[in-house]
Image (cartoon, rainbow, N blue to C red; front, side, top):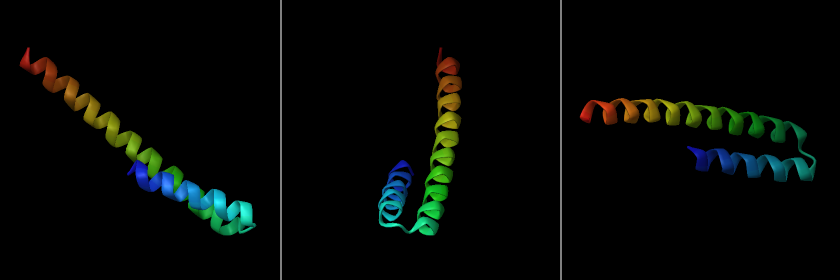
Length: 57
């Protein structure tokens, strides 16, 4: 998911550089959304791993 966020970020930067501000804003929004989703999934898996690790001990 972070891979797609980085791809959309690069597209946003390139389109912003070329003057396509609408496309740049849209792809930046998508990149931001994908980054936050990936962050939430990471935190969920981190909590699950910590709970599973403490259950083994």
